[in-house]
Image 1 (cartoon, protein in one colour):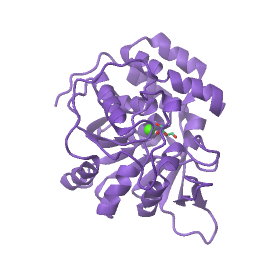
Image 2: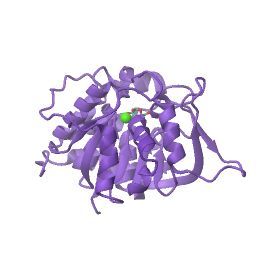
Image 3: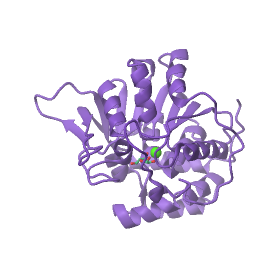
Image 4: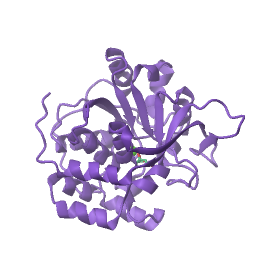
Length: 320
Ligand code: RIB
Ligand code: CA
């Protein structure tokens, strides 16, 4: 399978870190750059965690560009109660050896696709603040990427951070609205939390399998998701912790994993009561669809990719 050149935008919490492992150690992509943003944790912490995750798979040469410190119109509400104070399960991970780039994430998101028009796939795993800010400077931004996959929203289901909204859309709903209104189905695909809770839940058997594998990457994944596992047990009622960012990354790496999708017109609520809720208009009179929504993924195929990746040998030395 061809390796896809990627740009990844992340608020590196524990599930983002697993997505970064899939992207760098799965052999299916060539990560050109990572941009970080405030979300799960403050941006300095998401930047630290991105550097740690890249070093864990030996990819110390991937540039990491720090981005926005808070949502466009609101103060930051983090998800440290879910991912831990450090965003990585509070397991005391050592500081990274590499430093972030001086170029801001917004400038990076604008520059890379201009240098490689139509070549790069953008995968967003966080509140869409960096992306929306880049769109305000370049409304044609999405036409310059090969495709844009966003972990965002929750279609036709409850939320995870509120009764109606998924965290990435809720944390910065104005940014999510800007992205939705700039999207086209040909260029933009959203993978919502509805997919993650159906097809990407790490059951107790999956978690035991990770522990039994005992490889460095399997152990890393198991340890950093400890806090999320507690939250899943006490809040979401799922059979285990789900992996929204990794399943979105898996779809970007192998769109053949998509088993159900639809084209729909999506907006995002910005009022306080329904903040971040996906507004999907399926009426006959609905406007033309503005994005592709993944609805189901091949769970076995996703988990096979995940377990194959964490079973891979010691980290490759980054060629950069
Ligand atoms: O709602 C899930 C999303 O919010 C994931 O990206 C997770 O990392 C958090 O950022
Ligand atoms: Ca995330």
